[in-house]
Image 1 (cartoon, rainbow over the protein chains, first blue to last red):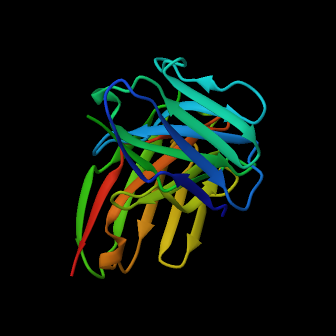
Image 2: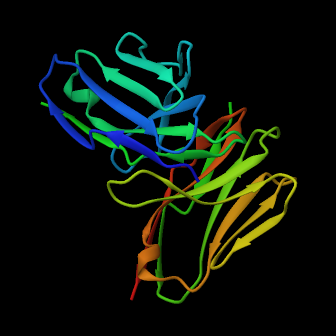
Length: 114
Length: 110
């Protein structure tokens, strides 16, 4: 399967600041990437679908002005959490669409907002 | 939308025994059913998947069965080892997005 990296793996930020998370496809041209959020002991919740060169599609209840997604190339998608608050603390995971339904996930980014 | 139910939520087996995790889905249009293994603090890893034109698929100690009529699919792990301990998620596609079950925490005790 495809190899996906995320950076950073862990980040701590203060309430009110913004943080950017990068998702890179190392060996696959990813036209579509997905961003998920996972709270402790819970399942993955899809936040948005990111298509290269176009605007992201957000799931119901996800604030697009708070979670900014940019997919400017076939190997990089970024998620920026703006004006972060403690309730945004979570495990953020990206995945890329392999072309025939399959998704390959990155290692995740643990965000802690203090 | 698609609803994926997964059971059990926790499963404890002895090393060498088999483990079975079951999922049901609601969308009859779903045709792709992957299983992911997630270790603590890591991203999910695709371990096996099955498509609706196949009833069973096997890869070494792991097998998946699909019953499209009943809308359920299962993961079977034989000869379990301690390193199989993790959280396992089933999923079903809705278009090209995936809907995940709530996960099963599998513990394999030596």
